[in-house]
Amino acid sequence: MARNSRSIGSFDWVLIVLYLALVTIGWVNIYSASFDPSAESFFSMSNEYFKQIVWIFLGFIIIAFILFLDSKFFDRFSSVIYIISLLSLLLLFVFGKTISGATSWYNLGFMSLQPSEFAKAATALAIAKYLSDLQTNIRTIRDQIIALVIIALPALIIIPQPDPGSALVYAAFFFPLYREGLAASYLILGATAISLFVLTLLIGPLYVALIAVLLAIIYFIKNRKKRPSKRLIVGIVTASCLFAFSVNYIFENVFEQRHRDRFNIVLGKEVDAKTIGYNTQQSEIAIGNGGWFGRGFLEGTQTKGKFVPEQHTDYIFSTVGEEWGFLGSTVVIVLFVLLILRIIQLSEKQKNDFSRIYGYSVAGILFIHFVVNVGMVIGLLPTVGIPLPFFSYGGSGLWGFTVLLFIFVKLDGNRINEW
Image (tube, rainbow, N blue to C red; front, side, top):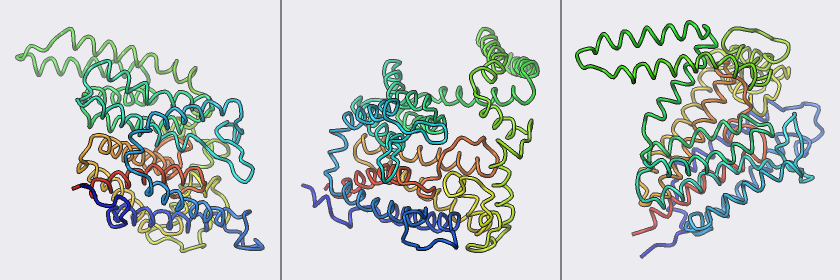
């Protein structure tokens, strides 16, 4: 027997309060970053901060709609939602609006809608449906390939828009795959490839190859009594060397110049404060200006001077750093960490595989967005155009993350309602 699945008390209020806190703090910083003292009226759609209030209000309507639905709706119609999402991405190449060089939006007149923000939730539902229907760990090659195709399809459509930042987020789905039994060797392989790529850019392929050979020799000497497989060691070293010597080709012929510039700046190989590196440099200055306790609300010199481009969108965290300082930045980081940990904790309590897998997908997506955005703003990672969840300005981003989170809130509420 089940209780009323729409009971307010059945929903996890820790998640809801964390969501409201992040959205509220995000709006305060959007207000500061886009504040114009010469504006005629606060209630004007020409002001980003007022438009964000409208998006937040409409987001509450979306939340009410999601929580009103039967939780089984998301399981039953996950495939349909996923297909509609893919079609919405494909139709951009015909009806899409180009903004900042990317054809990623539909022009609705009163606003622009970015379907890639909703595709993440659709993909999370699709992968949760597929893995839960397996009723076993994802260990066969066939199951792994199908799961990879489900994840890769939207990413491959998004890349040529071009929007590599949004496509990068789909790496987050390795979190639920790993939880459901994907071998750790895949994650180790991916981490090793990334490390070799960065190391090769830093010191060159020849030195990377020499290091790989040296490590293999040391490993073989230390474990000679265990008789390690010579073929395996030689194979790993050979693969590492081949990969290292292919990095420069990939870097020069696959990446665009703007991507190469951003990598070079982060790696300290090139400093271009006037063009591609301007955003990051100004962001670092803004955060440095904040010190321990910040300059105060509307008192940030970098923020008021509009020195940081896109400060109310992708670089919103620089406003937090300048006006609220290290203390305020820590509070925001703690809120995000608590949100992600709470989702993981609740995911482990789910009574069905679909809800658990979806929960891990949500946690993974939020984690990737949070880490990459903050890393980008403080200069640790290249600029890739990934918004900060619930913080960055924009209706599509706010609604996409709201849908993503509150589908899980609804699924978790169903767990509580069931006897």
